[in-house]
Length: 227
Image 1 (tube, helix red, strand yellow):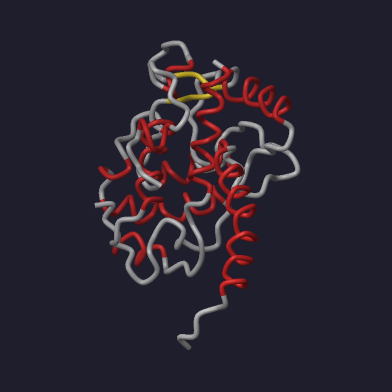
Image 2: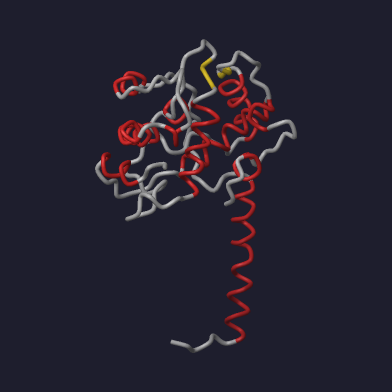
């Protein structure tokens, strides 16, 4: 069960980087995206540059392996009730009965995008969408769809309440403080294991997020979305 919490944390971290800058008007953004010198350095300088680059590369790789390429907030964000349920109902979306994100009618997609943006605390849309081409497929668009499919649709709060992106993000891009591993583990166990349930009433188990093989890289391995 602890690993299930970790999987959800990794998922959120991936989605958290989904939007960047230059938001077009909501109608336009969603409409366009249907979801449908030649001098070589001396040998000495080249060697010095190569040597100085090695530690940085190793450090970056280790950081990425730990899932800490993003800055950690001062405090991890607890699970909470979504603030957008009424807004979603106004555009005809019932969180208890929703299809995959890509299957939403275009009119609803156009209206749900601003809510996704607010839920994650972004000013603009370019993290998910390519600048100047909102129809171009990006990695973050794929991750967003899988987040919706694997978390918004099938998961609930422990009391049976619906979840939306802000239930975890609460208007913030990064939601987990990863500096203290033991504290992080305890937080995820309390928040993601104990406070989440499945809509189908089945137990929330490790395999719910990780699969039977307990795969930790769910985005790359289970969702088949390469880095």
